[in-house]
Image 1 (spheres, rainbow, N blue to C red):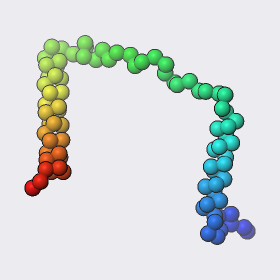
Image 2 (cartoon, rainbow, N blue to C red):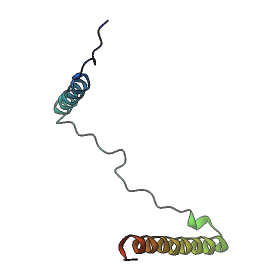
Image 3 (spheres, helix red, strand yellow):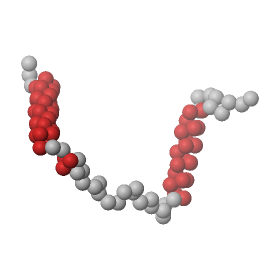
Image 4 (tube, one colour):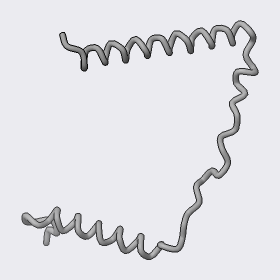
Length: 85
């Protein structure tokens, strides 16, 4: 039974084979451009319109608190990374 990847050149042979296989595939499909799955932008999110006024207020407050927490986190990170102690 022969082992294809036996010896020190085994993995290098596989990498070369895969690189050549990919190159041949790409050159065979040069003129064929696959269009993206979606050409239109994402539809608008109407989720906030379905919320009650209290829920909208809570959502806005949560977003503001999240933004403040992220700012604190990155400020502390910058201080610990770049400022002298």
